[in-house]
Image 1 (spheres, one colour):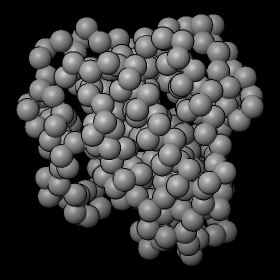
Image 2 (cartoon, rainbow, N blue to C red):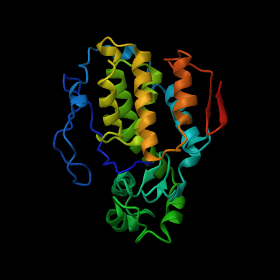
Image 3 (cartoon, rainbow, N blue to C red):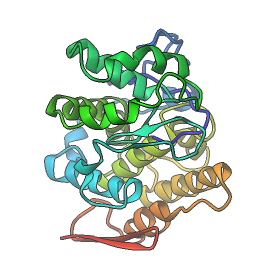
Image 4 (tube, helix red, strand yellow):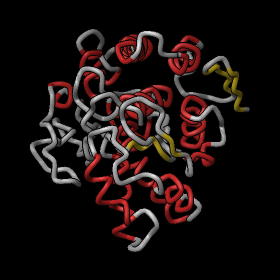
Length: 289
């Protein structure tokens, strides 16, 4: 998604031990060194075999709802599947933003998506752009991508295989790690979505304004439910810190995805994200029956 100066971490399976997130000095898909675990990673609670008691955002109905909620903020629609062919430079300094979850040519996740897709589907319409994508990774440059990349993306997005690849990369990098960690923290479906949306918007990095950095800062002020803390108090603290981080990107940024969506659900006590739901993003009202 649209991240500011964030190194994307390669998602790895979470092992249920006292040190849950095994992000030691390993290599990412692109051979980049991934930062080691922070104190927040190390403080993740050990699993106790009761994860299935926590309302699950990864159940089919709740996962569909999660994609609708994200799409309302990312694409101003509940029709999240309409975003597969989306591609444009939105002027945020991260190159082209494209696809289902806003993969960016400047933040490594778009490159990883195309590399993995090409491995399974050689000769696809985006494969010729891999050298250019590698060259512009980490920058906002279009060198080697213009003028044909956007048309190639839109054409490939019509292929069911590329749609499935976008789904899989969304789950691997954003959805699955966020939901798994939220469950381990003892958070219900709303908290799992709060983590997921923050992972999408801020990126799974460890700096102060990326997801793991936000969580680490929150843990300094509030305990997670799995450690006896109040779920509502913890989520309020997380949303406060997240909102402030959004403002550091741009002082007048619209924070309604937090203020009149997630915070609204929290204030209503809807920790299980039970439908029907009504929320506002960018002044537009959305409803899910």
